[in-house]
Amino acid sequence: MSDIEIVEDSKNLLKHLIFRVGGQYYASPITAITEVVEPQEITSSPNSPKDFLGVINLRGEIVSVVDFRIILKQNDKKSPKMLLII
Image 1 (cartoon, helix red, strand yellow):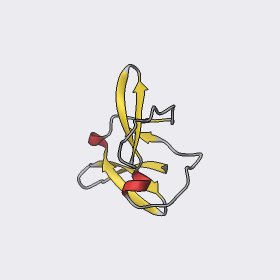
Image 2 (cartoon, helix red, strand yellow):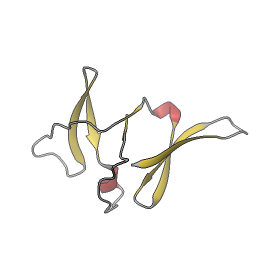
Image 3 (cartoon, one colour):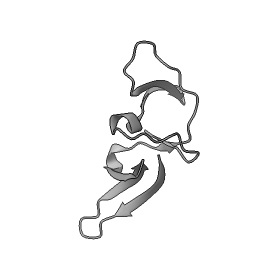
Image 4 (cartoon, helix red, strand yellow):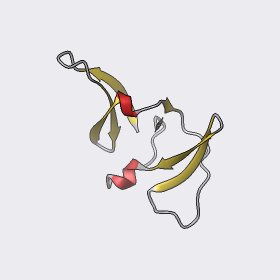
């Protein structure tokens, strides 16, 4: 995921995080996002669905990691600009 920007709607003052997966752009309300972090080591989980990459330890909290490229049926390779949206 890359090209992250925050957009403010001047009429309703709603903020969204816009991100790109493949050639498509998607948005999520800022209120649904805790933070955006650099990729880190992911501990895989055996016998899990293909889109579930595993878990990370984020400051002592275990966080599940899913790959939106698989969920959204995008065949992109990992980007050097890839970030994790928490």
